[in-house]
Picture 1 (cartoon, rainbow over the protein chains, first blue to last red):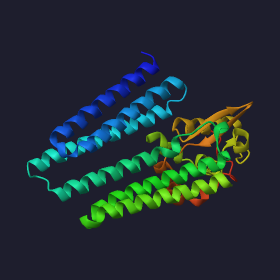
Picture 2: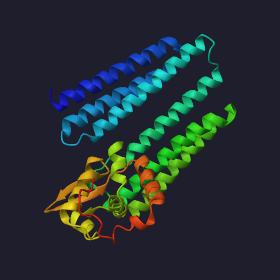
Picture 3: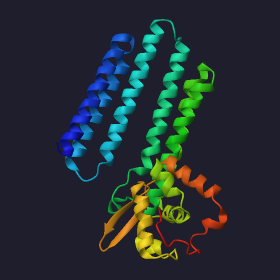
Picture 4: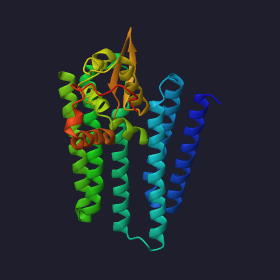
Length: 189
Length: 102
């Protein structure tokens, strides 16, 4: 089996698992149909981009590895949501714990994705700014996303439930704002 | 992860990573900072590449090295530098590497 077939098969399998989990979540909680629709749609986009990337660039495996990571993260979150929905149905988990655990899961996924961000290198000739600045920017963005993800998870873990969503979003927005500011500095240098 | 710890354990390799923090450099530019032989330097580069901490790219006749650290590896490098013995971390001035860099 060649590399492209392996990537297509792996991505197809990951997509199938995510779709199955999204469908199971829909059956368990039909009132949240929109969320599962978004999850399924996002997974379809990830699968499409992965296979396109694999077809256009057989040399560098990094983008497909990242997509695989995203698919695994999506599957983990959907499995967590499904598990919590089922536990909630049996009265083992209450609504607040459900929301907190989902929030913590999203934060940890964000942090793990940010961790891998500086490892994705583009060829030196494709830098939009000087290669040194581009790498510093990537490292800054990676740290910002990791800290935002950990802050997001921490907010859901410790803040009162009425403030957790707003607190977590505020932490994320600070991370995004810091990254955008750093991008402007790098591109104008 | 074992290969990462192995790569970060050596002061010369940590110094290489510190130099690459400032931006991509050619193998020659990096080697100029160390009083060690070229084969020893090549072996250090090989260990760093095996641990996926650096990436190399061929531009013309030169090989350019770039940092390829995840955030966790970046933090580990910071900790390793922080807690390393200052006497042995001055690799740029001490010709200590003569044998197997691993």
